[in-house]
Length: 523
Ligand code: SF4
Image (cartoon, rainbow, N blue to C red; front, side):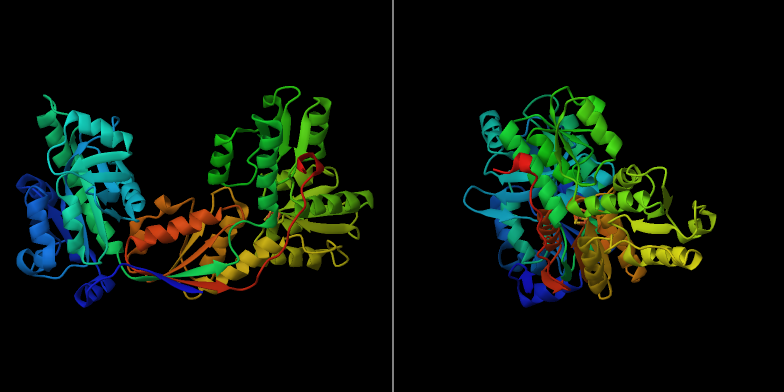
């Protein structure tokens, strides 16, 4: 599947946009002092600032028919930013705060600017107070009554030129950074103006960084990616528990390792706790997809808690194997990462018979009760190659070693690793959507790096640092098994704000695994 996300542009703009660099930045600033503040902050000699004058009429005359390019800016440009001051209409904005427009309207039409969140995040990383949101272009200075009306409609700030200037970009990447000079008429207007100009100067080098990241790109989308059957089931269990039993529903540990999923469920009434002593007597508690040890189950039952178990059936399978091997007198070498919730749960099944093996080097120090009775198991979310190396080291020392009945590393982990490798080989950079505590997502980053392609783990588009994208024309994109599919769409939309994006999906296998729900939440 291939899809292109772009804006219409002239042939001249097409050529410039495909080779945008920091030197190709054109800044449009309405007033002399705004243009001067931006110029003082710029570092690249080829960046240009054009003063366009105050008000929509002047702006429209200048941007019409490419006059910004032809008359004021003889050199071509690859990306354009409108920078200036604005009236803050959102009540919590302060003078000097920066607003990056997600959309701009003049009341008759709306222009959307999809990369705004990414630019606002970069400004924040540079230590500036910046927010992405809607902006309005109005014909006159905003009156107090108009401010509250615009604020109620969700606008952050208003100015008098931006809507008329955006067409000057002619399909090239375009952004808007406005610094709040005032949030109402009053004695603070002068100091507010100074704060705004200072912020514009500081924002100028970030604008250049944004322009350097602008380019036409291909996004190679790995398939499969994102939610697995175990994660979908765990989330559905919490949703149904909330629906059937009402909030609050307590969840021991994160239901799955993803900050977005957890924040969303929290908003709907789920309460995440680290241990059962934080759950009130008689309450409903959900055990996470990573599973729990028998000691945790015993505590819950002793306390009379109403338990709904969201442990992934593939994790439960490893628990059952641990119990079986221990019962048969085997020492179980559990290949996994110390401290991971899944590993703690599995170790708890037979603590006296199970020993954790993290690396092949750990094998030499293993002291089983009987060298002829050793078995191994694996955490479900390991790197396939590395886990195989540890298993090989174990087999070399204990040739009679028993293996699990079927692979412990689950289908979703394996499939996502194969898929990310297929895109990493042809990408300049790989972005992995997932949270830092998500084991299978971290493995995807490592898998890309082993294929020789730099990779970054991001919770969402705002974690993308612009410097990563400089000189990058092919971005590999995937998501860990606990990361929502919507994050992938959000990342593609953000990248499309930096230039035309052609999305090509590379599917290495398809998945049809589904797990049933526990009886407590069946309808
Ligand atoms: S990653 Fe594998 S083990 Fe973990 S929840 Fe998904 S299917 Fe289950």
